[in-house]
Length: 137
Image 1: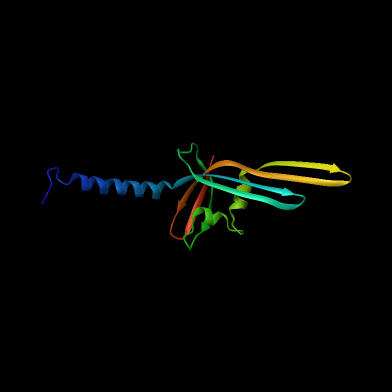
Image 2 (image 1 turned 180 degrees about the vertical axis):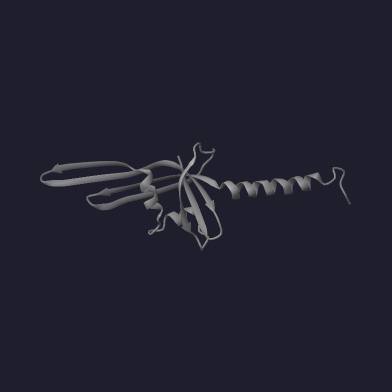
């Protein structure tokens, strides 16, 4: 039996679902990524990778992209935390902020180096077996 509104709610739900999926497929998702590691006396002391989905659309244009293989359909966090991930070579091109502190006390040298990628917006597009990441500048 047909409802009085002519099943417009059903058609509307299908239409909004199609728009949502095509917009996420065509435009990808935007993530804010920051990275920081601390080296004390030539030993890696701390390493942090922060990833969060952007709450607002990032302003700018995509700069340069990298394509990562993802045959096991891992999340972005798992994919970027792999030790041999080429993402870290990619973000070296974007630029790091480096702080270095050296102290000498009783002929002993203490050194601390902090390397930081400030919070940067990236456009991420998940496909079947690969992920495309673009820096938004």
